[in-house]
Amino acid sequence: MLASLGLDATAEAVYRAMLTRPRDGVTALAAHLALTEEEVRRSLDTLSELTLVRPSYEYERQLRAVSPDIGMEILMARQQAELAAQQQRLEASRVAAAQMIAEFADLTSPVRHPEVERLIGLDAIRDRIASLARALDTEILTFAPGGAHRAETIEASKPQDEALLTRGVRMRAVYLNSIRNSSTTLAYVAWLAELGGEVRTAPELPTRMIIFDGRTALIPVDSNDSAASAVLLTGQGTLAALCALFETVWAKAQPLSEPVMHDASGLSAQEAAVIHLLAQGFTDEAIAKRLGVSPRTARRLASELMDRLGARSRFEFGMRAVQQGWLPKQQ
Image 1 (cartoon, rainbow, N blue to C red):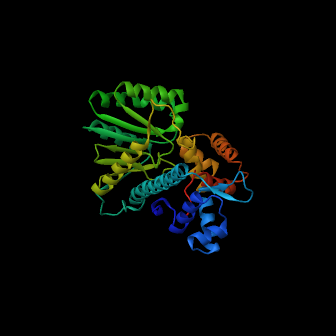
Image 2 (spheres, rainbow, N blue to C red):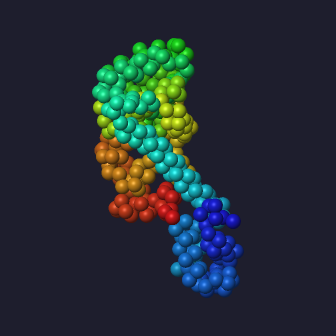
Image 3 (spheres, rainbow, N blue to C red):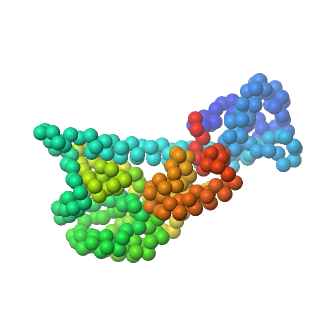
């Protein structure tokens, strides 16, 4: 019955029996359920990993089932975390596919690829952005990773932004949550919002990207050096995937006008992102780049999260994060 929530039939039977027979030990549970004691112990291990049983406060060395309302909330929160992780992997796959097209398209051969155009250098990239912006009819979609923007970059982009919004072009942009700590960038996005631009923030973004009218997308060939080269993609299938990626991230991103929210575990979206990146083995420097913060801030966030769980190493932190429900249990 609860298999869809990650609980197998035997473990579910043991959990139900513990709820109705809280004083029974392993031997009594095995007899009641017609199971072997080893099967009961394996189920208790599973229930313990899922935090559905806890040590009894009254009877030493005895486990007690948590109440169903708490237990079901734990299972559903874990499943939501697994779905979120799966969605992140899907988003990363979409971006990887687009960047593979950019990296391996044989643009130097006599036969050109009409759906892929490579731009070399920042001047060529900015010139093409300006050209595409002048031809816009309906909407421009942007992923803007990298954290706070420099004042000179903001001032250079304002005339084009104002011209687009004045023409009635819809402008939607997703920035990193870290811009909430930059007064210069906040002032800029507030200015955009006054003119009709829509801005949201997310803890991390898969790549830098601009989509023009749903027909042309510009992404960097190397996300670590977005100014070196970029590609324009116009293939219908590729654009459909990239537009879907934007809408998925946009739906989960938080309007800049709203305060930072926390989930049921008391974690902010940025903290949840740090947890998942730590679990994937990212260094403090890599985490800092993904979140658009300084390495010092990334180290502080990681240290604070480890302190909250009383973990002395990152390996121990990963184990405790799973037990706490911050990370999905590995199958």
